[in-house]
Image 1 (cartoon, rainbow, N blue to C red):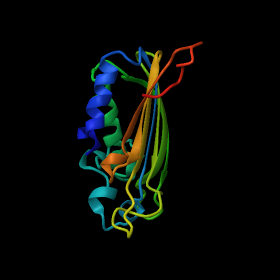
Image 2 (image 1 turned 30 degrees about the horizontal axis):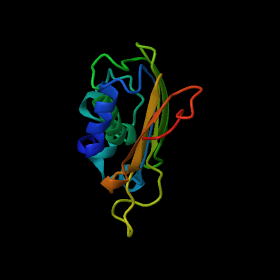
Image 3 (image 1 turned 120 degrees about the vertical axis):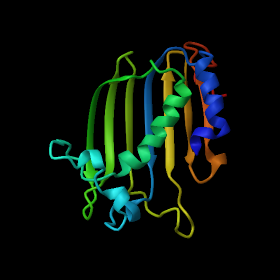
Image 4 (image 1 turned 45 degrees about the vertical axis):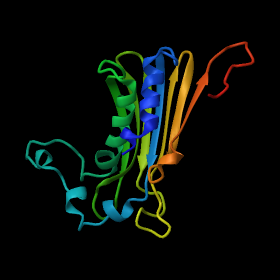
Length: 185
């Protein structure tokens, strides 16, 4: 998985060494061709409620284990792995909206804005609506992009999850008023 690729360890080192300065904002997107999975009732374990959601006292409006539950958890794991500390980007307030598959009710697209207890703002979005699939000819992977902004620079990472070498990692440094401002490493 992306969490164990070399770029992950480089990103974690860049952040832990303070090269970005104080982290202030994170944006993340993950889009995949997964409608074949989330809009087919035969894929019961991916589109039906989990046991904790089935109780009569459950107030959750979620109709199934869709894209947020099944996919975006991976990109969140990558982000928190590279941040490297349990007390960074702890959600304090979350606004999220979703759309659902017509046949199963599983979530297929979402957008969330998160305010964290340490002042970091965070936006994450994703969808299963990318045309194609990993089983198509040619196969289509998930498109992933993460941008982590600090007071002294930003880290940009993105690519196709099927092709590890596309996971380009770019460090841009802030140097206001100098010709080096915004240059990539």
